[in-house]
Image (cartoon, rainbow, N blue to C red):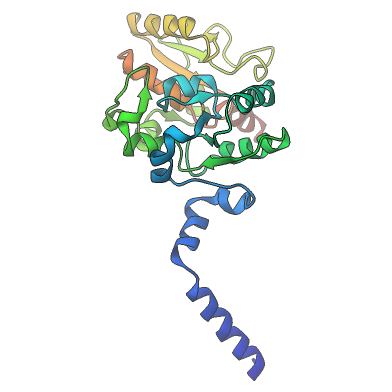
Length: 268
């Protein structure tokens, strides 16, 4: 290394070391802030202070919203065909800033919702990228869990507790039998014509709460183990709250969902 290269290297290291720690932390803790640098965001405590001066919108599915949400938040799913129309109606009624949120720091829906809003010419929009779990833990009085508020943060299901009920696709398949009931909770757009487990499988969308509860109670009364899978293994975490509230103890989810099962079948 020549003299000029050495000096450049020293200066580069010095500049990196001089960067604020918070910037580096945010890059690691909030990957969306790096991926969507054009999206304005609001911090947890700032949103709490300003919650009466902004419109808070949950960009997740209706099932996620009904399970756990910020108190007073509206629900306009990012996947909704009327996403833009509903935002336009809100903007006609108020000039308040609009804040989108989703599950947490690695969930990108809040950022995508901001971009989508801008596409529809909706201005003064931002993302609350800390998400619902940080909010519920910090402000339980301003959160709603299964229709009840305030919530007890101890009732929030941890990732480790969810993991206890996850089975690899092969293990999930081996469990299917006379002592089990299988639920395919994918939505209509995701389901294939034929299910994975004919004779054992029922199909019910997460938005059909009445039918879903019927199957849960049936499995419980018959002493059967409930085996549930969705598309990619993400939506079942919200169903776990309903299962626990119903008092069902024997239940498992498919890790990776239907996609994981297809990948397993494709392996040589």
